[in-house]
Structures are given as structure tokens and as C-alpha cells.
Length: 115
Ligand code: DGP
Image 1 (cartoon, protein in one colour):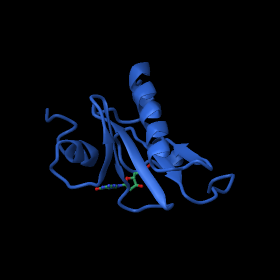
Image 2 (cartoon, helix red, strand yellow):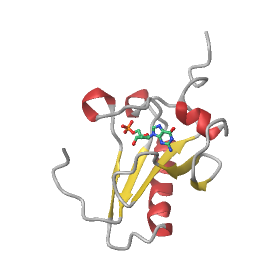
Image 3 (cartoon, rainbow, N blue to C red):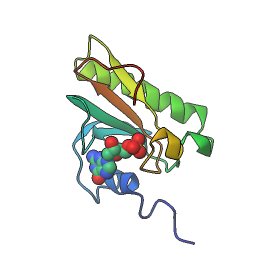
Image 4 (cartoon, rainbow, N blue to C red):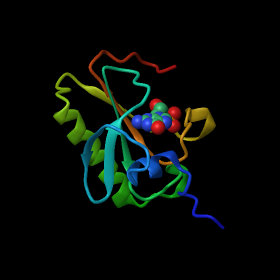
């Protein structure tokens, strides 16, 4: 069976096969700008390991690394007035790429509840 990460778009970005604007990286997680930004700052924080979603039993250390880099990105991007971190999960959650990722959105006021 083919490696399930072979055709995953975020795995391909991580491997450098598809260009993306990188914002931050470390041994476990990468952060790059969303192709279709929904706010002045819209960065995706993605574990290097292919994990399909929150429902794929991600290791707590991976989840911690994602959230830690999300807050670092928010600081680096100067989001001192606040920001939103979103992890869409499954079809009803609006997940369209099956590789766990957190959206860091900021630079404008965020409405609540989300659509
Ligand atoms: P979600 O709907 O939560 O699964 O978010 C997926 C996000 O991924 C969406 O906001 C658009 C973004 N995206 C999809 N393809 C690419 C790509 O090739 N490059 C980048 N930078 N972002 C992408």
C-alpha cells in the first residue's frame, strides 16, 4: 500500500515539493501562510508527521508542539490585540485537507459564533 502521506498536499509542502511561504519551522512542526487567507494574518501550523485529524489520536506532545508554535507565530506576526486558533475537524468541522493543522488568524476582529 502506498504511503498515505505520498499525495498529501501538506506533506508535499513539508517535503519542499510544493512551494509555500514558510513562517516558522522546528523539528516537529512547520508554519506557512494559507493559500486562501481569511484574515490579514492567516498561517497554518502543521505537524511534520502525517496525522489525518484530531480524530487520528495525535500524540499529546504533537498537539502541544502545534499550539506552542501557533502562539509563537502570533507573537512573531505582532498579533498583540488577539487572534484565533482553529482546528477544523471532519466534514462538519469544515476540514478540507486531511492532515492535522491549526489555523492562526488575526489582524482583524473575529466574529462569534463562527459560520
Ligand atoms: P481546512 O479547511 O481547515 O482543512 O483548511 C485547509 C486550508 O489549507 C485552507 O484554508 C486552504 C489551505 N490550503 C490548501 N491547499 C494549500 C496549498 O497548496 N498551500 C497553502 N499554503 N495552503 C493551502
